[in-house]
Image 1 (cartoon, rainbow, N blue to C red):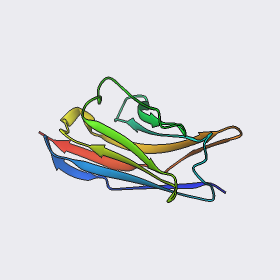
Image 2 (image 1 turned 45 degrees about the horizontal axis):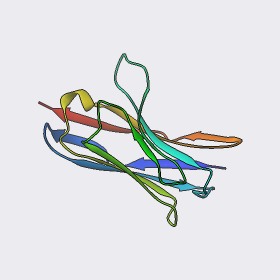
Image 3 (image 1 turned 60 degrees about the vertical axis):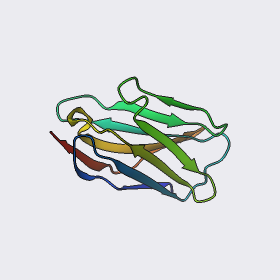
Length: 116
């Protein structure tokens, strides 16, 4: 059974940084595995933040491009999100997601709050 556990969220002032981690168990980060970070703010729909595929390609939403960096450690089966220059509008619950043929799994989420 695939389990994803996020950590690293918290309260930070605008302009600050946080690093989120997502540890996977019951699975491995194989070549055909796509992992990503998503977020959901109160009253809003869940949105994609960043994704990373097994070939090394990454993609970012326009709102975080240049400020956030996604990375994956395929030996430790762990996903990271380095968040710099945080803004109050980045406040949300951040979720990691793992997808590959026949498998789709979400973590439980970690709260990120950015104060102005």
